[in-house]
Image 1: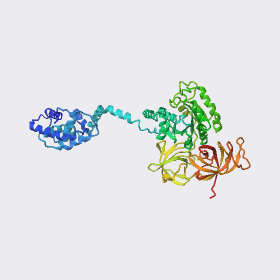
Image 2 (image 1 turned 90 degrees about the vertical axis):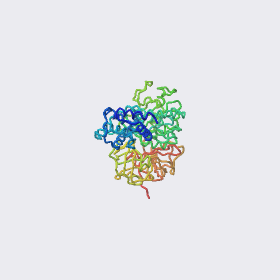
Image 3 (image 1 turned 180 degrees about the horizontal axis):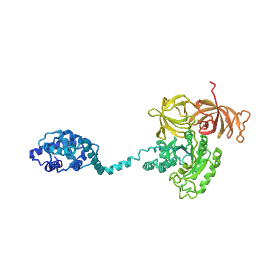
Image 4 (image 1 turned 90 degrees about the horizontal axis):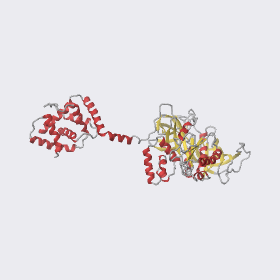
Length: 604
C-alpha cells in the first residue's frame, strides 16, 4: 500500500469533516481505496476537476452532514471534463479516484464519512448551481489549466501541422485572376524542373521544410543539386534518373495572375509527352544552359532545344521567353559575352521557326539552383536591366480568349476516382456544374458533377483554365486522350480524311503517297497515311503548282490528303487554330508540321 495514496484523504478529513473515525474503520477504508482505485489510475481526464472546485468554492466551508449525495452527480462531473488532457498533480488525481470509488461501494464503514465529505464539496461546487453554471465555470478553468500545462506542446503541434496540407489559395470573390499556362521546354538537363521547383518555393507553394527533406534525400543519393526538381518530379523513377518523363503540373499565383506550370520532359524519347504539354500552354519558357558545351549539345542537330522550340510554335504558343540558365556556373560567372553568344545563335533559328524576335521573344539570364533573377534582381549581373522572371510574367499583355464560343475541351488524361475524372485545358467556351455536354467522337452525353480548376473546386470555368472534371454517364474505359468535350448545340468535327498544308522539316529521303507517320493534333495521337500529294506551294510567293507532285522532300511545302487509322476530332485551322495545327513524327523525329485546310467526308 502506498502512503502517498492515503495522505490527502486523511488531511481532508481532518480539515473538512473533522469527524471522529476509528482506526479499524480508517484502515478498512484505506484498504478498499487502494484496491479499487488501481484500475482507474489511467483516468486522467478529471485532473482539472480538483483545481477548478478548489478555486471556485471555499475549501474551509463547514460540511453539511446529511447532504443528499447522488452517485450520478459525480459521474457527470467526470464526463464534462473529459476533453481536457493531462494536467494536475498526483494528489488531484487521488481525490478524483476517490469519487470513482465511492460510486462503486456507497457504504464502506469509515469510507462513508469520507465519501460524504467529498461529495458535499462536489455538491457545493456543482450540484447547487444549475448545470449551466457548473459547465461554464469548469470550461473556463479547464481552458486555463490546459494552457498552463500544454501551451508549448500545442504551439509546437500547430507549427508542425499547419504548413503540411498544401492547398491552393482560395479564389477571391473579386473577379478571377487571369489564368496563364506556362510550359517549360528545352534540352535534357537544362534545368527546367529545377527552375519550376525554385519558382514554387519563391512563391510559397512549397514549404522550406519539404525542400530540406528533399535536399537530405538527394544528398543520400549523391545528387545534391537535384532536390529542387523533386517538387515537380514526383515519380520515383524520375527522381532516381534525374529525368522528367511525364509533364509535371504545379501552380503559383502573383498579384495579377494565376499560373499553371507544365514541366515538359527534355529527353528525346519523351517528345510525345512534351507535345501534349505544349498543346495546353499559352506561353513557353525555353530553358537553355549557358554552361560551356551544354548549350552547344542542346542546339546542335539532334538536340532538343531546336525541336522543342519548333513544336511549341506548332502547338500554338505565341510568346516565348528564353531563360539562359546556369549563369552562376564557374565557367560562365554571369558573363555578358556568353549570354550574347547564346542569343546570337538562337535568334536566327527561332525566327525561322516563326517567332518574331521583336514581339514574341524575350531573353533573360537566371540561375535556377540559386533562384537568382527569378524573383529578385541579381547584384552580380549589372548589365541586365530588365525585370526578373516572375515580375516579367506579370507584366505581359493579356491573352484574348472568347468565353461565348462553343465548348471545346481536348482531354489530356483520365482516371477513376469515385466516378470518371478527366483532365484537360478548356480551349473555348465556358463550363459550369451540372451542365450537359457531349463527348466526341463517340457522341456520349455526359453531365459535369464537379469542376476543379488547379485543384480548387469551382462552379464554372473560363477558357484557358486547366480543369479536372468528374463526369456522369460515361465509363473511364470509353474515353481516350484526344477525345473532345463539346456542347450539344455545336459539336466539333470528326472524321478520318482531311487535306492539309505540310512543311517538311527534316527527312533524309523523299516522301511519296503511301507514307505512314504518327500525327499529333491537340492532345490526340493517331497513325496517319499520306494518301495523295495534291500540289506544291512556293514558300515565298505562296503560289500552288499546277501539276501533282510525285514526291516531296526536305524544306518543301505541299498540300496533301491524309487519312487517319481511326476517327479523330479536328477542326480547320481557319475556324479553330488550336485544333487545326499538327505535327507528323516518325522514328523519334519530327518530320513535318502542318495545318488542316479542309475536312473530307468519308465515302462509307
